[in-house]
Length: 252
Image 1 (tube, rainbow, N blue to C red):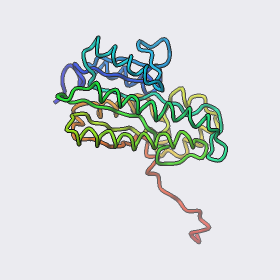
Image 2 (image 1 turned 90 degrees about the vertical axis):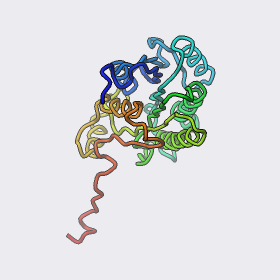
Image 3 (image 1 turned 135 degrees about the horizontal axis):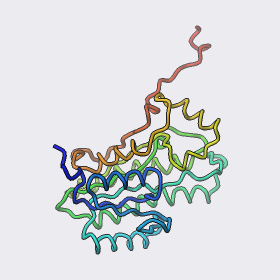
Image 4 (image 1 turned 120 degrees about the vertical axis):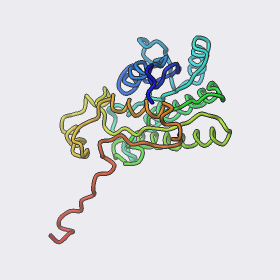
């Protein structure tokens, strides 16, 4: 039965990358569902300025949350970078580019999980939701660093879930694998590149951020109380599209 006050009523949530895109959509939705939301981002305009690559910044953020709100029930690690305009094939990617993408996407998620595990109570249901990507399982040649970092997020998610469960802690950890989403990360795509991506999506469109946020909300809520260590794709069918062999190989 749905709580009239919202599925996250009286929960305290921290959402990184909350200045735009998926993080902002999740923050808005969580507030609509009754949560006290701490919006964190590197941008000065966000209520909680957080550099996800810096352990001290994470500790300061959690210290503030615990001092003001008294606890943390939900963490959403939504901060992430694709790597900008640099071509990033395995052969050409620079080490600096690789490290920058990993610092935000994987190390930032690790630091968040560590701080959440230290801060969340053992006697109340808590949830961590990490944002990975379909690039974690379906390689894109030009996004070598991004895909590898997001694959790391998937495995980190499983490790956190296993660690908490084996210790008898009531912290669940899952991740979402969005496909192509209409966010600032994708709106500046060249038209031809955008059309190429659309051709890979059976539903024929990019996701709206709220469609990803709805999935995050479910995994963060008690409705997902028996879901743990799972990577859930939200991709318009992109990962399940049929593989069609060239006609000449079918002797047609």
